[in-house]
Length: 167
Image (tube, rainbow, N blue to C red; front, side, top):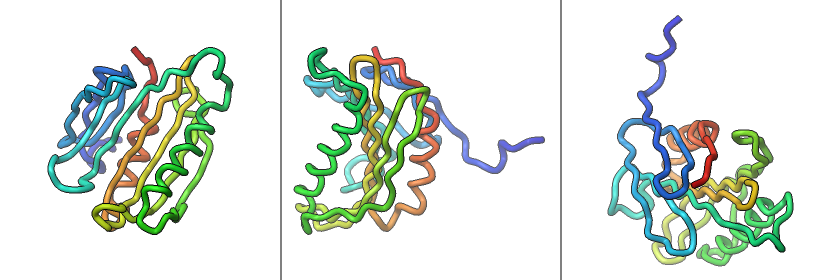
């Protein structure tokens, strides 16, 4: 049975900074960000256009005194609050929230619509937080809301392909 023909060809990326491996369709590119606070890898299709699809992966170290099994949930709530404040309407339209296991780690996925404060463009954000041994992996994928039907399945597949071996 040949099922390779019913999907686009994929590339496996290994995060240069984060060590997180992800699979994306051919045509995506990888860039390492010089974020001095967190190990960060960025994946994109094209640069320059506001809200062209992009995925940012960060590893956020948790100080031992603050570490617990639900750091990922806390980070999700912080990110949702920050995004609501950055939205032109100051509200988010939550499309989906779920708890999953990703590569044998507890994870939370939040998908929501908002209106960018600066550009006034309706955007959909796909946000994932994953509990690691001494850190949280945060993934933010963003797209124009009008493109979400095309990109959300790509992001779902990319997230399910993750292998978490932080550097």
